[in-house]
Amino acid sequence: MIRLFKHYIPYPVLVLGLIDFLLLMMAAEAGWIFRAVQINMGIGSIADRPAPIFSFAIALQLALIAVGIYGPEALQSLRFAAARILVAISLGVIFLSLMSFAMPGVTLWRSNSLYAMVLAILFLMVVRILLGTILDSDIFKRRLLILGAGPRAGRIAAMEKRQENGFTIAGYVDMNEGPSLIESAVKRQDIANLPQHVIDLAVSEVVVALEERRNSLPVADLLTIKTTGVHVNELSSFLERETGRVDLDSVNPSWFIFSDGFSSGRRLSTLFKRGFDILLSFLLLVLTGPIILLFALLIRLESRGGSFFTQERVGLYGQTFKILKLRSMRSDAETGGEARWATKNDPRTTRIGRFIRKVRIDELPQAWSVLKGEMSFVGPRPERPQFVNDLQTKMPYYAERHIVKPGITGWAQINYPYGASTEDARHKLEYDLYYAKNYTPFLDLLIILQTLRVILWPDGAR
Image 1 (cartoon, rainbow, N blue to C red):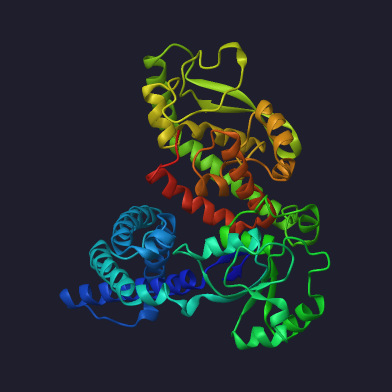
Image 2: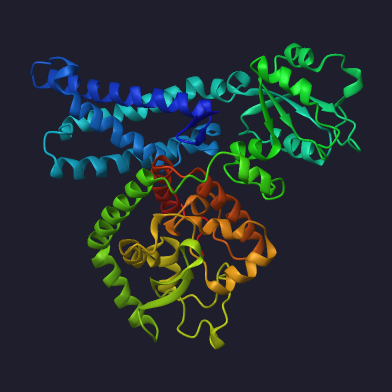
């Protein structure tokens, strides 16, 4: 993997993304040339039309990211990829149409765009047919040596079986720290020279997965291995990189203290984020205002009670604030004022409510909280004080998710289904901690684009 703006991107995804961008530029240029020949117009040079070529490639590249074309499913299934490419092209067309009205001359002509889109579909599919097996092969996978043979090493062994993993395990070393769960593990005493063993296996990374480091950590060997250019990692950081979340079962306070991250308080990033929040929330309220009012009327017609409701939530540094949402449940959904988790097919949800929850329309009024500065557009989901008080006693590091502003969408929201239990909250906390630790504007942009995928395919909505 390569770390780009503090976020890990698999090499196959990066390579495929760059190839896709070049192919989209080729499709735009070929579409231009094809149309020029048709109408007997001078072709000229690509240097004469950089804006239309780049706008086409950028718009469709962003659409490809938004629909999840670089996710594990799309990389492994040609049928899945084809469906997402068609959706991405359609979204790209809509975006380019809006751009042509706002900035005439920046985009391709409609006739050019038609040819370019057809060629783009063809090019994108052909490259996946040709490179599919290569991208999924061991060429791009790191070779690991695991120090340990207990339950922690067993977790890595289980991860290796997943088709989308980005590594292959060259071997395990039983460090004599307890019962071994890995039958193929080599006893440490049977290895005369551990650094040479690493070189012989052509290992690119050593992962320390010991159950107990005291008297088991081979410091001298690891120092030698590190100085030979082989990356040395410990389990918590390895899992963070591979899963995109902070694994609560393996981390400890010292890991949080000494690992890099949690730099969201930097002034430049904070100013950029706030400016972005103001602009995007204002545009969202203006553009979706008619939609909000329409569903507010439908909600009022369907059931008794107001169309909107306010609810107390926990925000930055544990401070409470009121959020505004479209009502999706009956007005008597919480008799007695007791907070309850929403469940799948919750009987308290109205017919209109089920729809607006599925496509996230009920969340739109929260843009007002973003505009006021109580929320950000991207961040952990703001929870109710009753849930926060309960969850803080049941899981470690829950308070750390409040070091960033809560958001309408977030890393947990796009990576994990709607949380409706303590166990769900624990999994979502792992993603929230990853976001709080590794926040950058780049990650915010990635989350916003991927939110479109969640809206189009709302598997986790309740």
